[in-house]
Image 1 (cartoon, helix red, strand yellow):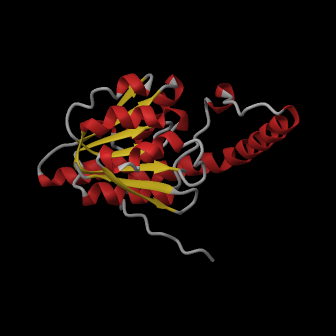
Image 2 (cartoon, rainbow, N blue to C red; image 1 turned 180 degrees about the horizontal axis):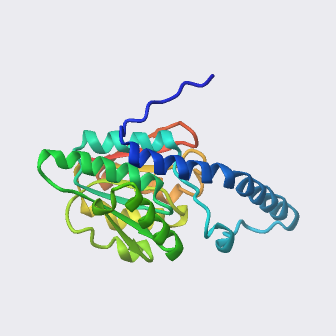
Length: 231
């Protein structure tokens, strides 16, 4: 049997919401897999480039893997993160972990915030509802709209950035947010190992020492790029 990684949250209310969302994600997975396979066959037959079916994905969770969510929580706790940014909030699964970390860090006397961004209005509404149900709504500011606009000003030095959305926008987002991160801040980008071509512009930036980061690829479940801002 695979080893079960302990959940560091120790928050029954938040974990109940996460369990509900995990069950929803498990139900949706077969439809996502079938849709992806059909798309591969269609592209092979027509030689067309991949496209994004917005209408199909509009109501799908596509959450960050639980192990990666737990890693994000622990990293935020270790940084004593007060200002966290998330590119790609969706239904708020990873946001719950980030908000719990910010809340738990607030015990040191400062109250922090998670700045999430999501372009799909129905997902924004769902995420806000899930965060409220988890008791974490007061620690999150979900900005609806194009992340290239909503993240232009995060309101102060950022401690942690989670990149978990469309790869085509990753380079633009890091260029906008990087100057707003403090030295020592961590950037975590999902599926970089699985999609190296799609992330090429991003990794060309984040792995270039002249841009102020030191970076490594953690080869786990699609690969996570972990980067620390050093100057």
